[in-house]
Length: 413
Image 1 (tube, rainbow, N blue to C red):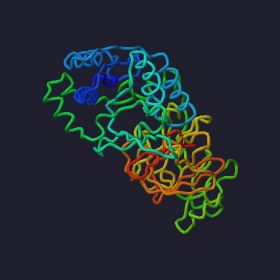
Image 2 (cartoon, rainbow, N blue to C red):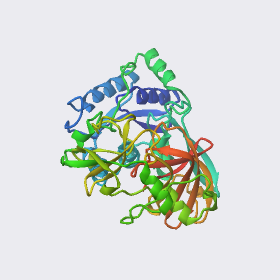
Image 3 (cartoon, helix red, strand yellow):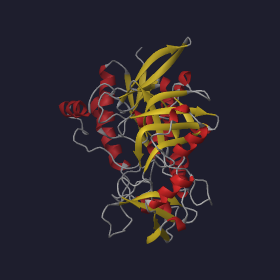
């Protein structure tokens, strides 16, 4: 008997073609649609996109001649993904709900629902691949970047475990988005011309401040601009104003390759600011609505160059900004991940305290991979890039790769 595969049919073109390809490969294919969000507050469309998606998904299943099922996972989605997102923004951090959704919902609760339907495997329309190899006499699963570099979605799966990968299939890993569109059109699938979804996983495109106001109420605060001269003082003294722990600017002549703990800390921990470190230039409605690297929504004019958020302080409700793309507060050479937040997809390649290794790293979806060195220490993982990185924000996921394989990830501190 052929293996039974349950496809997460989302109502989009990618999962539609994934289901078709699996059926062509001889699998016993069924479709399962997830309802994960009911609220409309903050969504730009003003409605729940899943209503239309459900219709599209059911039409695709009918067209392909496969059984169609649906399940409501909205309660655990709110508890595991949305509440986490609110909590992180409240702390002044920048979460990635799509990464959490894959770890907690699509490859956890969805698998449980699929197993109830008798599934041997589950499949999604992600642009990535899985390979099987052995290490130490045991089967190990490799998670590889998709062949379409413009659509590679391996980053979104950076928190998956070997147990989750064991059940997973990714039919689109070796083909391009263009090929997917052509296949859907050739088959006359209902989703052939449907636009790709945008915004938060299962919620849709949102006005983020309005969406966050469900939990985080507006509150007037100050915008403080940090002048470049502040960093010259930081370099000279090795500290900021002395009131809070601070880092210092990385100088290329410093030998980060020595793995000296003090040097790593100074490179990888962000600078802390106090109100008197800069100049008050405006006001905002809540520091929790802003993230590092953000430009829109500041309403600070009269500058030769654009103004960007370089830090937020949600306890004091202050947004710190810097002028210009090259502002030292916007660009960092390193980052730090606490030991408890370091995750290895390939546990057989897990670094031990004291070890150092070179990897390719990205800190956001579609960011080109960056050359970096990883330093594993007792307190956590220090990542030092060959070049300055723009807009590194606490709460984001850093993921590291080698030879097209994603090996691990962690939440930036």
